[in-house]
Image (cartoon, rainbow, N blue to C red; front, top):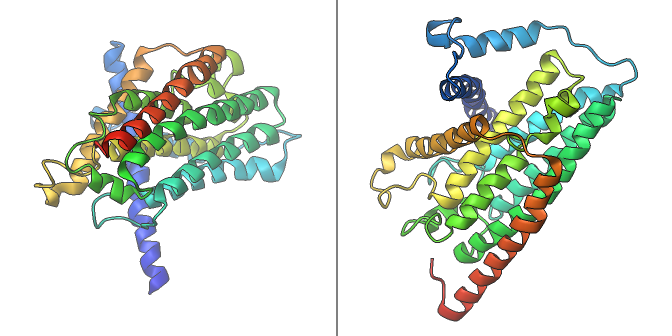
Length: 323
C-alpha cells in the first residue's frame, strides 16, 4: 500500500505537469504570434487546441537516428537524465500548507542541488554525440550554469538570513505579513534574469544558438530524444516560475490566507504571470552574445548580489530582522 500510494502521488504530479508543459508550448506560440503580429497555431482542433497533441504524435513516430560514432550509452541516457532531474525537482514544491509530495528541512538546498545537476544531461549529450556543434553547445551550457549558480546562491542567501530557514514551506509562511518582493525588488530582478540563464531560455539560449551552433547540444537528436530534452526545458521553466513565486510572492498566500480554500489555484495563477513574463521576454529581446552574458554575471550580478547580502546581514545585525 505504501508503494502504491507513492506511485499515485507520482502520477498525480507528473501527468498534470506533462499536460501543462504541452499547453504551455501552445500558449507561448500564441502569445509570441500576437506580439509579433502573425498567426499562431490555429488549424489543428478548435483554435489550435489539439496542436500540442499533434506535435507529440509527430515526435513519437519520427525516426530516431543515432550518429555512427556516437557513444551509445551516453547518447541514449542524456535526455532521460535531463527529464528525470526536472521531474524530481517538482517533488519538493509545496502547493499549499498541506499539499506537497515531500517536506524536508533543507528542501531549498536540495532543490538547488538537483537543479545544478541538470548540466550533466547537457554535457553528456554534447560529448556523446561526437559532434563539434553539440560539444560547443554543451560547454557553453556548463559555463553559463556554473557562472550564474554563484550569483543565484548569493541572491538566495539574502532571503535565507531573513527567513532563517532552508525549508520552502517555512519561507512561504514567513511572508504572511509582507512578500519578500517589496523589500527585495532588486534581488527579484536579478534572480529573474538568472533563471533565464539557468534554464537556457531566450535571450540567454546560447547553448542552442541556431545562428552559430545549428541547434547546440541537441543537434543530433530526433524523435523521442529531442522530445525529452524539450520536456525537460519546459518543466524546468515552469518549476522556476513556481520557485520564484515561493521566494518573492508568498506562494499560495493571499490576503493573510483568507482564501485558503483556493490555495493551489492562487499559487498557479501567480506562477502563470511569471511564465507569461518569460514568454514576453523571449518575444521582445534579441539573443545576447556569450561575452555579454558572462560580463553581466561576473561584473554586474556577482558584486551586486554580494553587496546586497552584506547590507542585509548588517541591517539585521544592527536593527533586528526587518522582514
